[in-house]
Image (cartoon, rainbow, N blue to C red; front, top):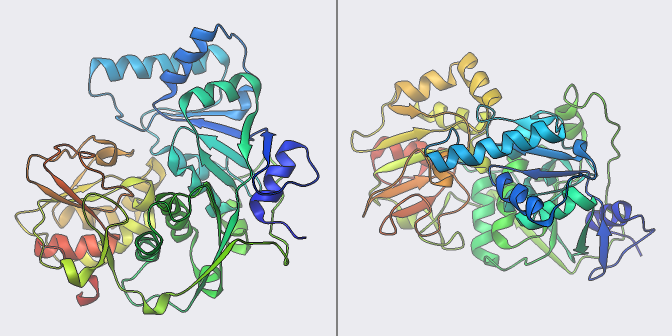
Length: 417
């Protein structure tokens, strides 16, 4: 019987000829990522008395949450991270100026097809946009991988999602994922591996694929994949210079426990309403909802293409005087590209406020909400209190819906622009 992408990668990284869903394996990740929470893993390492790492070159540290530090406690945590990477000679270290860990690692060529990557962030699933198995783990598990090089993992069952048709104007993969999360539920794909196929996928940019595999986490997946193709190789060209990688594809007769088909031409802009991502509605059902702030950021939708989509709608227009527009580019490279092309100038001229690259308001920093305030965000989560007050509300949407809404001061349909 044929095998899925997840089965092939986990077999390879475990030194086995084959594996089956439900099997427990000891897998050796190619890379273990930790972000600002690195200090927690360092503390665990100190408590168990470990003094050696399995392989420092398999470790990446990126300071992206609450960065730069906003308190003495944050500063002390960051300092502990810097001392750790210096002591153990960890070369894949990115300080507070770099941006969000996921985007930074992919830009730097540390993620390639067929890799197994784990890290202290549930949205590690985004690495599947390049054909790598990415999955989030806890900080104590990170410490374990640092020391032993391996991690036990259960081989997931796999779902196959087939996409057909073309998106309507100002409808994007963010709307597709909110549609799927709303339809399947936050636990609809619990511990499953999801593979995306179909003519629609072939046409999507790497940026749109990143949004898909990132948001897949919100329906419970263990990992998600877009099979690597010519666009993957084009993205990696020039980024991966000292590594050979092997593209892993599913067999034609691979077994999937469920297949889902979606005609994306029938989709409309979708909004996730407070306080669960699965609480989705077509934009028409929430149009007119008052907003106090819009946040263009996060690892889901703060890539260059996302900024450009918003700028295209905002060009020559100004946001509503009652709205605060927070722009947090996903990385330094993204911000530089947006500066060079004029995208950033358009966003700022429309009334936007620029913050440094990083997680920003998505991680409760640089855009906190007061009691009763409402934020429309391109992030991937809208949980109660995530951006400040427990009496505030967060709606999620695409960059296009965000830009259209910022102009009117209420949630609006981007197809009207």
